[in-house]
Length: 79
Image 1 (spheres, rainbow, N blue to C red):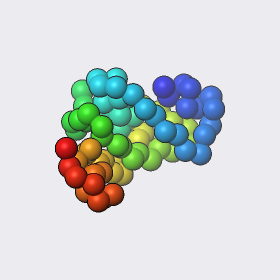
Image 2: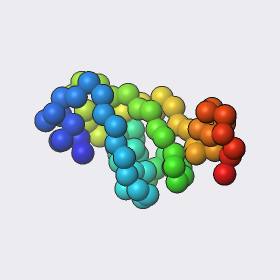
Image 3: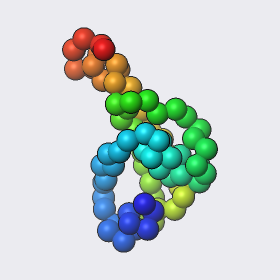
């Protein structure tokens, strides 16, 4: 993932995936290890900031919304 991000040099990226791979990727980007420092549930959105040259552990978690929280934001019923 890091190699691909650096090869493409995007200004922003949307990563979509399934558990546990998405949680592992978020953990690697923020902590540098596979052992997640946080739990990612089904339907969770994560906002992360990285420097222009991405490396494992260089990401900063800016926000995380669960599916229920997203439903509240848009005014729909929580599941």
